[in-house]
Structure formats: C-alpha cells, structure tokens
Image (cartoon, rainbow, N blue to C red; front, side):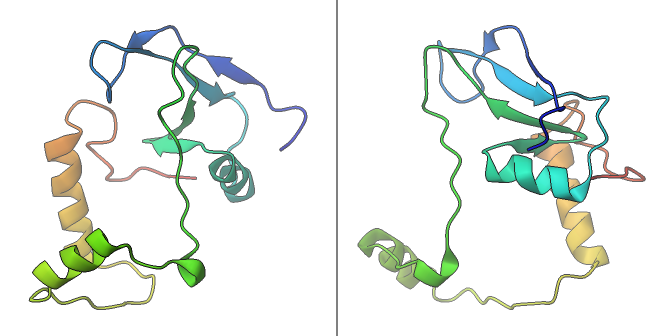
Length: 130
C-alpha cells in the first residue's frame, strides 16, 4: 500500500455482529483517490466496502471479525457442506460471464433496500463505485 495513504479510526459504537460488544473501524483517507488498484490492495488487507467507503474492523478488545478469502482451486467441501448441497440439489446454478444484467441489478436493489435501508447502500442508482 502507498506510504502516503493515511488511515483514521472511528469512535466505539455498538457492534453489528455481537450483542453487548463495542466495535471500531479503520478507514482510508476519504480525500485520497480510490482507484481500482488501491481498492484491490485494501481488499487483500481485509478491508470491506459499504457504499462509497472502504473500512476494516479494528476493535481493541475483540478479533472475532476475520475476513475470509477462499481459493476456489484448493477448496474441498466439508461433510456438512456436502449434506447442504444434497438437501438443495433441486436448485440449479448457471455460470454467466461478468456483465450487467437488469434482472440481477433489480434483485440487488431489492436486497439493499430490504437489508440496508438508510445505511447509505440502499440507493445504488447513479453512484460511481471505485
């Protein structure tokens, strides 16, 4: 990562994942231009994205939030994952090339408006992401 990029930590707030816990996040400087290359570097270092902001949990008393990246070439389903797959074998899956699909976008918008109302992610229309 660039040595000129500054990071900021927010104030403690209620944890979204664990009841009765306090959480804190670190953020890259919002005035620093967010390029695809920088975003990729941040993701490799455990950062997440919410709307236009990248952040990483950085809680002084808890390390429960662990970013997970799965190497698909080395993945081997566990016994419980295989059982889950069997229970859902009636479902179908189709691999598609990465391209805009209006139906998928509508589903995404419905998800955001249902799960992230008022959180800054719930209106992606017209937004320029990294």
